[in-house]
Image 1 (spheres, helix red, strand yellow):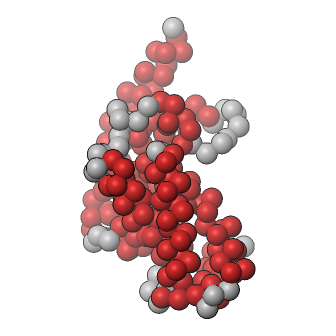
Image 2: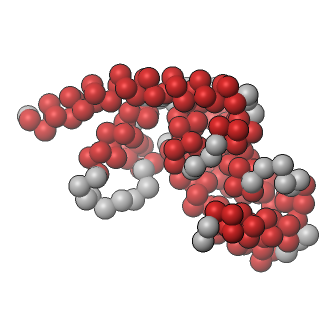
Length: 195
């Protein structure tokens, strides 16, 4: 289904859910629950935070469906809610602690990655995942929204409640950091396999 068609369907479900249609909300839930889970997992990788944030986000979607004004795509709106729920869950549970590669145990990083087979791209995914874990939460979220969720800079700015210039700057800084970090991670991986 084309993105425009999907957005139209999501809009119809959201409007019906706003009028109290539980079946329409169930369709929204089935569509957004796995997507929001992957989005939040890739940003913070704390299982308890992921579950709490996704549940809270979907509750807000249900309660706020009638208030959706159509100023953005439904997907952008849902990502914005999930992002704010994630930040709240992190503040509540982590007291503002920045989550980064040194703060996240290897086992949690492995749990956060959605299941993929152990095909030839597994090593590349692990390498990129470790690189992304070195970014700040804001940079990692911006990269996830831009490159994995397909959101534009303007949509990311709405989701993260910041100017689009800030989004662009975060993307530039993230790419620069990854350009420095990924080669070192590759060397470490090659060294580990050699031993």
